[in-house]
Length: 395
Ligand SMILES: Cc1cc2nc3c(=O)[nH]c(=O)nc-3n(C[C@H](O)[C@H](O)[C@H](O)COP(=O)(O)OP(=O)(O)OC[C@H]3O[C@@H](n4cnc5c(N)ncnc54)[C@H](O)[C@@H]3O)c2cc1C
Image (cartoon, rainbow, N blue to C red; front, side, top):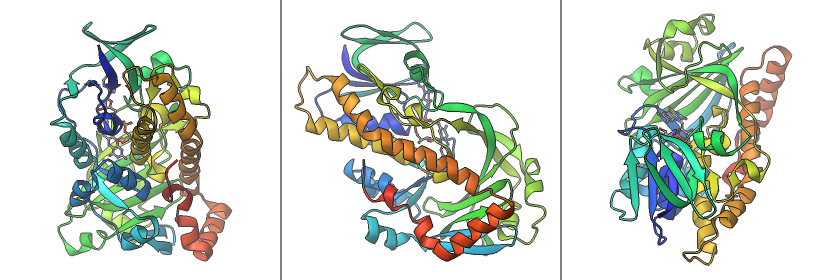
């Protein structure tokens, strides 16, 4: 019997294993995909996320693969007007001690994976799709579709938004019905008109839609995400191919807008559904006995605060933190550690989930609410954009 089973080798599962690897523990990660997925595009890492990467010893290698946006700028697409902005880059480092980075998900993922490559006590078992769990007094048995099973003392469910661990062991479900659709593309930074977008994160507010662009990777290619209220499909995947025509009607009334011109340079797009989110409130929504849910499995959140990956990393940081504080021995009481982690995390996660939901509304307001929002942003600018409560420290 090994010590810990981790279900899912995504950002949460791999960073949890990195947090655990220096303790005398035997760890097995079970991942349903046979090969690493290069799917997905950009991920934003606020200074709260990069602080964790630093404590895991990964920040330098991540910086080498990331962009460091200079500013965050906000526009109203209807008037083609700049509303407000704030400095990022060295300003973020001076304020919070750590940078604001943007990176390809595949680069973040492969850096985490590489860090585990030489660890003798961590084994990644690929092509293992967990299908069942047997929870006994002293062990948890993980069962896959082919009937294979492995026993461990504790289990981390890092199996993402549609977590099977959550379905089997927890009554709550923070994931609601499909509410809107996000479209994304990656545009090569290969000419002057494109490279003018490559220094900043830009958010465009529209009526019932919004768009975000930011540079990713060392070439500063441009990651573009458009979110509309339309519900097209119920595909679960992150990368369903689609055509620009599916949502171009939102932009066509504003042909001279910078964002309309930018999205028109490519017709190759991918879409994914954005589900409703019910913010978690209680520790028993995250942990039960010697099982804990981490990352999206525990606290799926809407993408409008760009915190999904950073929250998964913060979970791993707390795992490391509580293990360091506990008197570590082989009889370790995982249920107590998992309870303490959940108790520490719950309020912060709840606040981040809520803010992500509100941003989704605010970004797409119309009529009088739109005018009020624009006025407040023009007057208070940076003090609204800067998320001090989120970036300042870890909880
Ligand atoms: C392919 C993919 C592309 C993505 N693209 C983007 C993107 O472009 N932008 C963005 O902001 N976010 C993206 N995300 C989501 C983002 O990575 C997560 O929101 C965030 O990093 C939290 O990570 P997580 O580890 O909790 O979940 P995930 O990164 O979703 O990882 C979950 C892992 O669990 C595995 N898994 C699921 N069920 C089982 C099972 N039954 N048995 C074994 N393994 C299982 C999955 O294969 C996956 O590897 C993507 C996620 C994936 C999986």
